[in-house]
Image 1: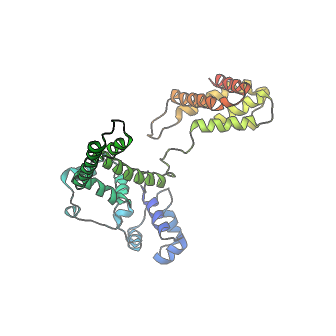
Image 2: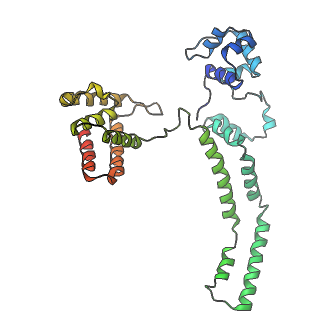
Image 3: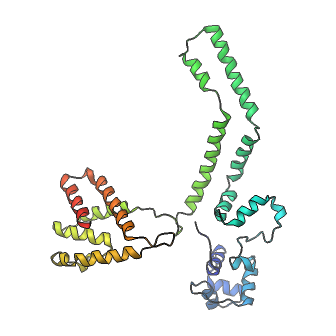
Length: 310
């Protein structure tokens, strides 16, 4: 999940929230359209002090909010004592050990109050006495049945009454878990399009799609081999010819190695070549398993591809 991390992004978000284009914003603030546009561009341009204050006043936010020095858009400089936070919580929020943005989204979700209420009911034992009374009533009915009818241990009515016992631990754990699942699913849905979120398609899905495209390709077996290899490496097939592909094979494979060596992961660290090869190998195996429903010659074709690539 990712929020605005620069003044350019923040200005763009505020303008979009008001549903304004640059020309309309210029008329309302008195700042030129070209200047407003440059403030939102990635290549940073300093905003003069007067325009910064004008934009902050127009949007009803603090200058610190525009400069991304605070996440508080409306509640500015709220005294800490009003928040009723203990020292441990303040230290946790300031320490950077947790994702404060995610915590804010959890706490402001429409179902979070119900989530906390259910936890409070369990922690304070508010419903424990009622649950115990219900269990006692079930036990009384069960005892009466045994005394009056002398049923066997496997009697279905006794089994039903036995199953009717409620454990407040299990009951509230399921309730709280259901509350939390609803909240985190909504938050996840809201962040699906974020740049930091995992892609919707996997490497195996991509390979499967390429294999299906090759099956529909009209050409010889060698040409299909070339097409699939090009698709996996992101090479335009039109620049390759079957007759000279064997000579170019080593060049393209070395080119791909260099690309894999420079690929960066989400943590910003360089991915080693081995990582790229392993990921591709696992995807290839997955694709083979997916394609097992095809005819045996097609399975042989896929095996030939993986052997060729490695």
